[in-house]
Amino acid sequence: MGLTIGVDIGGTKIAAGVVDEEGNILSTHKVPTPGTPEEIVDAIASAVEGARTGHDIVGVGIGAAGYVNRQRSTVYFAPNIDWRNEPLKEKVEARTGLPVVVENDANAAAWGEYKFGAGAGHRNVICITLGTGLGGGVIIGNKLRRGHFGVAAEFGHIRMVPDGLLCGCGSQGCWEQYASGRALVRYAKQRANATPENAETLLSLGDGTPEGIEGKHVSMAARQGDRVAVDSYRELARWVGAGLADLASLFDPSAFIVGGGLSDEGELVLGPIRKSYKRWLVGGNWRPVADVLGAQLGNKAGLVGAADLAREPDPVM
Image 1 (cartoon, rainbow, N blue to C red):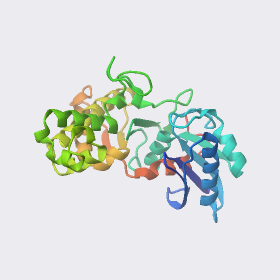
Image 2: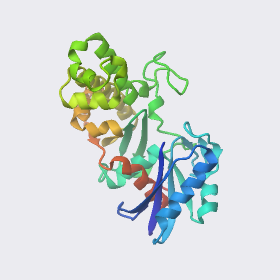
Image 3: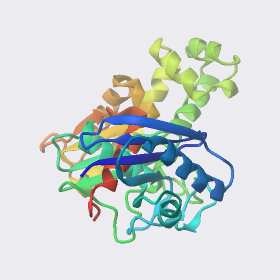
Image 4: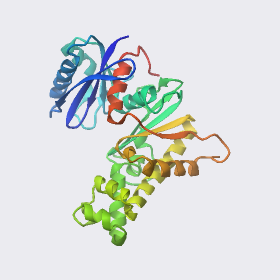
């Protein structure tokens, strides 16, 4: 069908990339993420114009955090941008003259991994992204499943613990409160406070106190074998695996793909996730068990996925 542009809206920068039908990024253009909603729309258009130079572009796909309608045109609600029923498709089309589709950013990343990354060869895939929070996407029968209103697969807000930890969404006990980068840091702080003798490496990487521990410190310390850091990853993996077991009961995929920044630790986190997943999977010793795979595209997945979805006439169900 031709070349398309994928747009990834980040907290500090907006990236636009020209992507071919094989998922290769041919050129990129980045601009700083401004402060106001209307300025962000202008910045998206600027990034698209910068990326399209010298290319014949047939469409644009935008990956946006938040709830996106089924028609792929409007952002109902974005948590970090003051968008409420924002007609993003209409506005960017008016500024660029190109056809535009809008996708949830986690759905776009899931589609990118399914088409061009770890999910290649699978028809039924569940993707989760482990970052500051927890997101996801569902591909069943080669179709991206978004639900009747377009807002399915908000896995991070599945209730895992009734009356549990308060979540930023206003609910309690959400999965991402136990399986995310924030949760990992909380586990490390709690353990370092209880047994500082087992956290010497971890504490030395920060300011020497449990309160000074950051996510990067836990990662670095775990690679050096720090007991508290390793145990914190295992606790994170326990909750991730338990949630995947629930999703397996719902969707029965052939593979789970784990992406996001925490997946960069590879087998440090993936191995314990697999163990926990099989432990909590109903009938796990007597049934086929889905693969748990690490994502392959890294932070390019959302851009590549959004670009590819722009060339799909109706991939969403």
